[in-house]
Amino acid sequence: MGLGMGLNMLLLLAMVATNILSLYHLSSSLQSKPAAPPPVPDHLLHQLNTIRATINHLTRLRSTSATSTAASTTKAPVPSDLLLYAHISPIASACRDNPDLLHRYMNYTPFSLCPDDTDLSEALILRGCHPLPRRRCFSRTSAKIPSSLTSNPFPPALPDYALLWSHYSCKSFACLNRFNDDLGFDMKLESTKFLTTKSDLDLTIPQLVQIAKSSSSVLRLALDVGAGTGTFAARMKLHNITVLSTTMNLGAPYSEVTALRGLIPLHVPLQQRFPIFDGVVDLVRCGHAVNRWIPITSMEFLFYDVDRVLRGGGYIWLDHFFSKGIDLEKVYAPLIGKLGYKKVKWAIGNKTDASGLKNGEVYLTALLQKPLSR
Image (cartoon, rainbow, N blue to C red; front, side):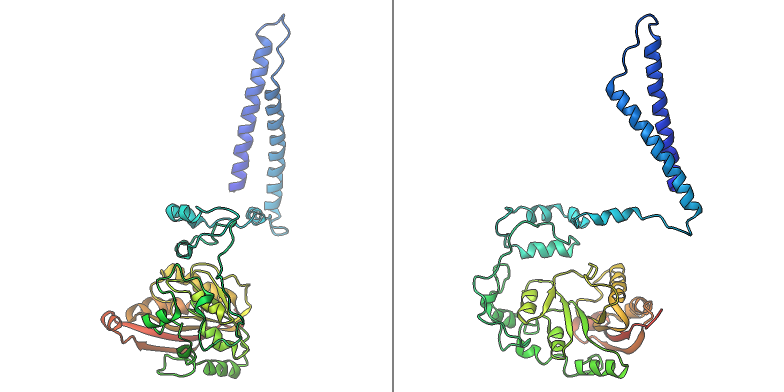
């Protein structure tokens, strides 16, 4: 109905314009009978021809629209937004909502080295400005690279010289480990993770592999959301399972270290659609980054995008998801339940630190299996 009304309005306007031009031509020819009528200006003739062509085109569109409406069961019209995909990927619309950051980020010299401003790009990405608009400068790299890159995802040490430290407060891995040895940069500590359990909230990788094997489900490809330095992918690599890790460099070089370990970091925020095709992943793990600080709508979009990339029979693993106990019962559990997945594991435990005890927070570890068919 909207298309038909629009065409009718355009047709009416075109007819009115044609009549006005015709009256102008008629009045100019009647002003003085004896003298020859002045010629119609070329631009008016051009406009008249354009309007007549427009009327003919609109008439054909109207008849075509009526025909397609009457026979919509035989052939659907081509969606007009298909034309959008013929263009180069545009700057994310959220970029214009942060003009100060965007101006600073785009203040660079084309065809030269990019500014050393990783923190600025992170700030834009986290605000939804992704893909970033700066396209014509050369990325900075370390002046020295390791003489050999190990294939061991748990190397004895990480080389400081392989990174650019200028935009981090710490300038070495030793500094990061002194600040907090649980950030993921202590390889000795990382090598012990996902192997043992301290409570029912823990799920080891051997347990995960056994669960998949017992249900005749193959684990080959996985996605780790909020992967830190990629320890889950590193451990899975030893089982010949390929894992893509989403990372953000929030105050520390998480992406670079993931790559140093021979793993693939995807530098994407949580609100972005996963750059993965539909129904091809066997497992999606949501780590510490996926928690109650994410807005509910964004979290719902995240879960449905997880469903999009998972194949039938694939798993989603919520690893130590934390929230207030009342919110888990009234908000998050129903939100997760909308997926309609089978509960393979569902364990809840109290968050025992000072903040958790004060706010009544709990952890949830859940392993859910996507139905084979809907």
